[in-house]
Image (cartoon, rainbow, N blue to C red; front, side, top):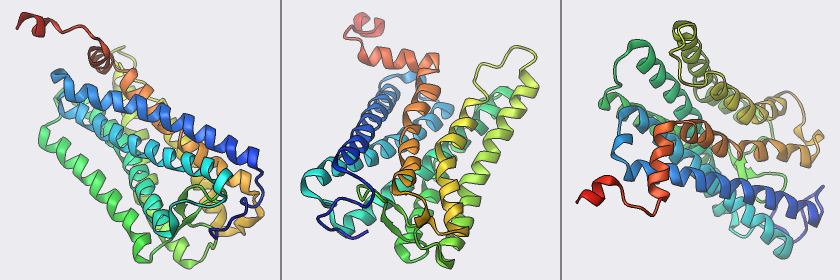
Length: 295
């Protein structure tokens, strides 16, 4: 999409403003909840465990997605008044890269948490620090690697239909896009989804009947499918047909759905965990802890 002074095709000023407000709400919600989670990990010693390190990795990734949404929301509001993407073509590439890194890291961190919980509940042994650190490093290095490939020519970042955020360009649907899409999807969506479903299924089979299962085994997989599935469907459609036949408004739906994932993850992994909630409350409480008062 060119950086021109006209509103994007298929959108009026009120619609651009409405999308910007939705993105703003999603961004602020995800940032606030995940920032609280990160802050609680830093301030609460009880949370500094290998398993919680995986949750911290997810919170960092989701904060990045929310920050990406905040930039998109700002550019949406600016587009109504200035009628152009305010950050230039280099800014589009940087925005697409940052969003892709954090999206892939979020998906893979969810799979890492699923495997970590399976290890904890089914083997009755604590996850080792070196295993947790290796997992986190692998998640972020792998995500950075795949997100950098479009910058090097395999795939390409471009504006989404609204022109207020950038992502992997699916408008051409050529061989370059197709080869990158299928290779990336296998390693960064299909495999994490398989690990997530398998890990929780094994946990449910082993511990569900005994009543010892203390985690939601269906929400993580549903979040991956419902949060990132619409993007997958859009990309697959772009491979087999002309994606321009889909209205620009409908093409923006996957982006808006994906930006809700950080909030859902924070509710599931942080607010749904009693120890993390306690850590968040301690960070928010103006009163000193018992240890502080004793000192």
